[in-house]
Image 1 (cartoon, rainbow, N blue to C red):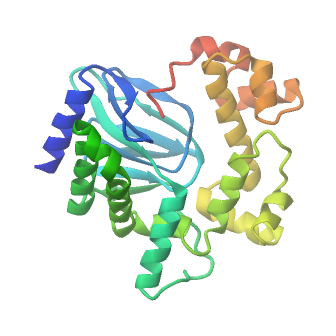
Image 2 (tube, rainbow, N blue to C red):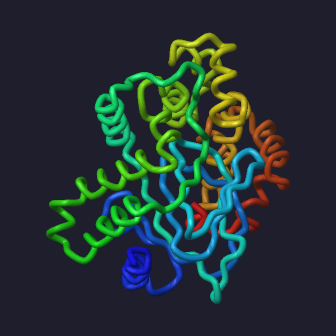
Image 3 (spheres, rainbow, N blue to C red):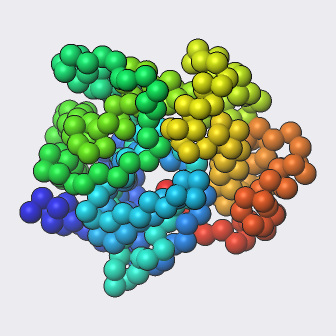
Length: 296
C-alpha cells in the first residue's frame, strides 16, 4: 500500500511532466512522458527510486535498467549516461531522486559499524560503482514518511533531517547496504579520492596526486580504483571532464568555456576527445543534445 500512497503524493505535487526541486532539500520528483535517450550526466551520491516506468544508467558500457521493483544507489560521484528510453504518455516514468549527504552517510555508517562491533572491512574490498536494491518494507515506509512532510510545512521544518536519516539508515541496512557502507565507512579510500577529484576537475590532478591523497602506491590505487568504478583512474578523469563539459555546453556554455572549466588547456585536444567519446564535435553538441535535466 505504501508505494501507491507515494504515487498519489507525487502526482499531487507534480501533475504534469517535468522535474521539480521539492521543499525538502536535495530531493527531486520527476515525471517523464516521452522517450529520453541516454545522454552524458554526472551522478553525485544519489538514490533514484522509480514508482512507474523504467530508467537506465550506463557506466563504462554496463547498462543498469531498473523500474518500480528496484531503486538505484550511486554511492559516489560518477560519470554516467542516463535516460528513460522507454518512457511514453501511456507508460510514464515517475520517481524520486534523493541527493545523499556524505557526512550523514558517514556518521550513520560508523554508528552501524560500531554497534555491530565491526569497524573494519576486509582488505581489498572497494565500494561498488552502482548498486540496485529491491524495495523492502523499511525503505518504502521511510520514503513515504519523508515525502509526507511535503504536505505539512511545520513538520517539514522540524522533522526533515530525522526522516532523511531514517531513509539513509534503511538503505544502509538493505540490499545496497554493503556498497553504501564500503563507500562511506572506514577504509573508503576510493570514494574519498573521487570526492577530491570532483572538486578539482579544472586542475591538472595526476594519478600520483590521487594515490598520495589516500596514502596508496600508484599500483595499488590503480587496481582498487578499477575494481570500484570499472574504469582506470585515467579513463575516469577523462569521462568526468567530458561528461561535465557536455552538460555545460547543452546548458548554453560556449565550447571554449566548457573545455577550460573542466581542466582542458588545449582546445584541439578537447574537441578530439569529445568527438571520440560522443560521436560528434562539441560545436554540434548543443543543437543535437536534449535537455538534460530530465536525465539526471
